[in-house]
Length: 134
Length: 430
Image (cartoon, rainbow over all chains, first blue to last red; front, side, top):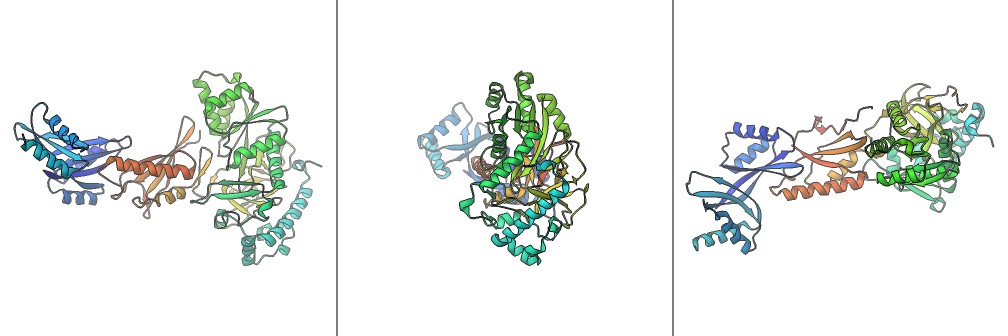
């Protein structure tokens, strides 16, 4: 299924991540999934939370740089090889994965993976078909 | 012919007056933009009867060169111009200067005087580690060395390992480069375990950037040489406008070619001996690009007091600073507005930036902080990186030196009246 993900620019400065998390706490944001990535010169915080568009607007007002991106959230069986099967299906169809991060919910027996692919629409179809065709 | 460096002051004044009058007439007849300036000020060539009338003439500055880019201020036809040099302009346009054959001879003679004052003769081998090319430093010193009859080793910049090889193998007795590069070489040698006694250097003539007495001591101790200062700017000729003699108490100005003044940078009023103000030069022998009352934006003082060396040429102090926002980084002139002009080429980027200059391992390091904007930001990190690298490439190409581009949070750079504070210079006097 599709979800809205928020990305926030983080300057490469010690304490910046902590500051941004404080802002999110202050805003009452409960992150469902989160990933912090880095390049040599700056970082990007990505997270899933409710009411993404409103959140992004408020973050901008608070002086942060934020954007909203559509991503896929795929539910997989919480077992060995679960992720591997899904990604292989995408690879067979020539779909590349830009980034991914996983999280557990209280849905026992399942894990969720946030995926951003070279073609999210097609990826969604492939996975849907691939899983239901089991 | 008597060496003018030791001329009687009255004779020198007469010579200056004659040369000034000839130059003013020639400029009035051949350089339309300056003629227009004189007309606007109501000054005619006949109003200038001696060097004492210099104050009547309008100033010239970088804006005039930029407005008449590239050759609009030349006083001779291009057929007579045998050399072009260029240096940083305040924005995208470089400052272009030109020379006739006689200009090159005069310039080389000025540099030769500097070398001779530092003890150089035809038995010396002089290693030049200034950049060769459009920059007047390399070729300027080079031609001066040849005129002095010494052996020039045109090493240019970069590849310190190779520079050291040449210094040892060719047994250079003198070194010409920026003072910070001299210190860099000294520290490099230390890390490689090379003792200064392995080199044959006796003297160094350093310029293109400001340097303190403290730095001089360090260079002399670390390289076992005597270090001399040389001053210049390409608009006047290049290196060789002024030079230290053995007394090393101020730099003698080549006044037979360039008349100096110290003026109040705000009012333009001429200041007396000993007062600190903006250095202004008038070229009285140049043919291709004679500039009248050119504002250098360097702050210094001059003195007519006798020098123990016997030279009667007036002395200027080492420049103590600038009255504009120009920086000198690794010997290269850098203006914050140049950075701004590049950022403006990228529609996603806002003009909130800051140049941060540090000194690391005796070399100047430039970081350019740029505030992130919504339009620059993308969830795809690769896209941001690509933009950052494009900006870096454009800036380095324009400035001529390497710069680290650092992306910072929006609104994080110091503001005054809505504009960010553009320069933070962390280099402390050492």
